Image (cartoon, rainbow, N blue to C red; front, side, top):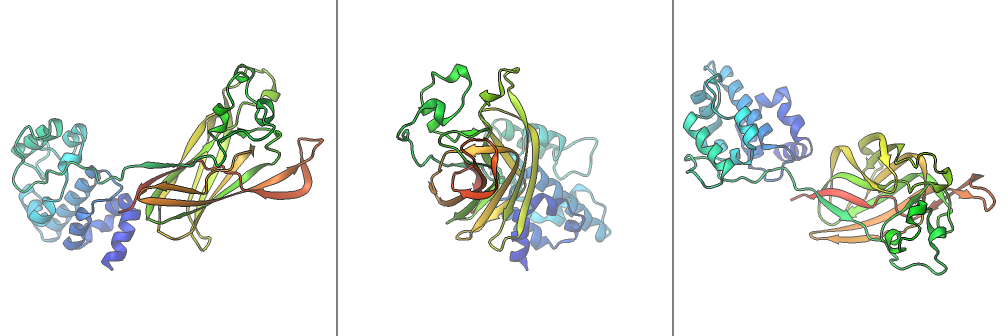
Length: 348
């Protein structure tokens, strides 16, 4: 039961801490939570939740919820694991610090002064006995798995105009400016004859991670559209769904905005998800614009301690040699990549 609770806690920390039933959990559960080193939630939320829990314990025992009684309910063990030094100066002053207008806090004036001094200049003042000197945020550090291009040299018969359609001012650029990254075109080219709006990425990791989001390319400026204002942005909507190995959606995100041509966009998941090791997951992306891709991305990326294995799939329409419109009824798939980066944290 405790294991399942902690697993759920790791996936939904803010939801659990803010839930009204959290005030009724056993002290052992609170102790297990503050022992966690990897919890994707700001420390100030943990401090607030623990104090609210202690206040409820006092009320249930018919004790006044003052400082001494709340400290007694929390106990020395839990108090010693609260990371006051992981809170910013502003958060500390506005929240857990002693205040003459709030006599229900956890800290005395002397303790607040010592903690604030150490937040401002670490080690500048002796910490009160029984308080943690750990200033590390429990919030997981976000990393990026950057997928490389499979072929980093120009293909036979390569020509800049045939590979992509950059603005006239960029025609003198070296081919390496486009070959080292994914370029998404708004219309067909010699090397990108298939366009689509439906992309997916199969992901497998050999070490658990928390997936926060993805990065995808934006459209290269469509020169064929003419010089009408040389627009810098266009309207786009992305629908991103993460599915588990059984095909069940476990995260769903809708992103809509004006985005810049010739760049890349981070799409943060509405709900981060834990990807377990050696389990296949699928990230599906639907777009409102059609993207023509000509790049195959590497299928394996080593980001110690995590090894990522990928499989790209794009549902596309076949382009007629005499028309830029999709040929009727012809649907194909390509393994050109659309997801260029994964935003994640290592799950300890």
